[in-house]
Length: 247
Image (cartoon, rainbow, N blue to C red):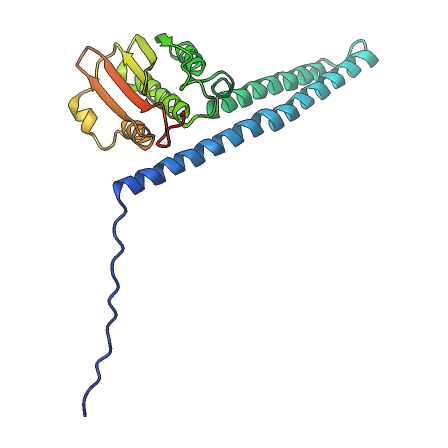
């Protein structure tokens, strides 16, 4: 009697995703994160900000009523009310700062050039590192919601974060240039410089993130430096999309 062997089913392995597909996915994830940042920023600014403002007005009304009805109200009560109003003021300032960090309004309303100048001013005030900005309101860069503007702005933020954490620099020069086909951003510091080993370090997630942002937007990013002579981050993005429209 012949023995029937069970048939085996061959399952073809799915091809590994290409680098282009992975970058497309990375670009889409970045866009989703940016949309979420925008939504959270508006929620904090509009809804939570309004509620805190109303709370401050209510506390001020209570304080007024207390002093109106009693020429000499208990000092502890007055101090507590003043403390509550002060706490609301601090909370409001914190909410506005977080909202600006999530999505700077100047980027939406005035464009990339002004957003860069604003970011440099905030960075200098926070770190004491002098910033010089050379940026014009480029047509391609000025679009409030253009993908290229967002990518360049986030790369700038990461580059400045690296300066404050690692460079020991005293000054930074930021330049935004508009060319016929490209938008170029350069961030140069006068710090201790970056080494070849640091550039190759796979743990340098900040550098990797900046490079991936640039590549996903159709551009390129380079980082160069020398010991004692500072570090320069240069990125260029095409001014137009693949379809030929403005970025």
